[in-house]
Image (cartoon, rainbow, N blue to C red; front, side, top):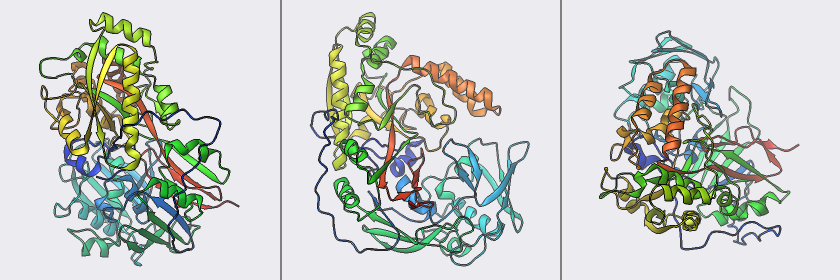
Length: 545
């Protein structure tokens, strides 16, 4: 597990993949950052390190990839690099829809169990091999092979996939054991990118750190802990990349990444310091890309504490939601890099339905607390600590929330804990919790409502999953179950919409916001993009004319 950013905690459905995909931030004891003023804040003056000048585009990222083999991907930063090297049969669009990839056409049988893919002709791997149905089948079957360690195999595993076979040189058939609405979304995931036959055969049960795919760039060099360099693949089947090389520099310190950008030693950086956003936005030499994500930030309320809890009362939970000044915290602490939640999930998920909003209303919060029989409350709230410099933000968020709650008569004891201790404290069965609430983040593994609603069903209570509020409503259980089996798109949407309305009213969380994914690049560069999955791409980057 490695840090993405202060707001980002990559949640996955089930604790088995949590270790690979969950990331979280931590705080220090400081007051919330002051609101931005008209006077620009001076930027840090960290001396940039000396680096060799190289042709191409230079990008500063915050972590060294665990592996460059597509099958081993578990975090969006490494996956962003790998997606320049290797491609999938189909591609996920920003709105969650599926488009053509290495397969120029695909069809689904009437029973929903068989998918047929027509591959693009004349696609070449970086080692000179040609893409055909046998090569694609070999790559996918390598992924299915239990000998290969794959953290994020489901829902493309032997429990679902019955057969992967070529029908002719350019036609591939995948047969499932049962219908799966999320099958194509999974097929578009980085870990299922198609690798060359030589790659698949030479590494049947291990990772290839010099992966061979079909992407616009090919592997050139890696220096562990320092950089990954890709060079343009001139035999690429699609639009030829403009830059002859991409250099991903591993720079964990956010201030150093920013200094490198300002010193023109890199052209792109991810995750700028939030407090510097106003100054960066006013710098004509820079452009900021701010992309809505699928992640939700919230305070989970444990409804099953031993000995009972006042949070078992719905009016009390609703009161806490009305007590929080989301817009003020987003403005003053997050510097605008988030969007208030208006449903129990981010708006980027397929199946999202806007419910409304818990507006900031201290008077209504006090009234609901009175009606709930709890005009004065004393609560404990956990938050994670100590994983990186920029993760001081979690302490600031916790303190800002505690300040809002204090204003309506709720005294909150804040308890910081390192990641292992924090996870152990929240990942407990019912009646075993030690705190009333905890500040958390959740990012669905796929851009679909089904991946978010696992947070509100009993089957995902710890230790089976991370539904740490121990919330249960039989109506929600029924709706989520029906939506999971529903073949009709509109009925599925309606079922998820009703489930979201019930959860919103029940308020098992203090619903906060969906954070943005941020990157900054030179104004001399265009075409650097990002997706709600928190992955970015420089494949189509080019100099500004």
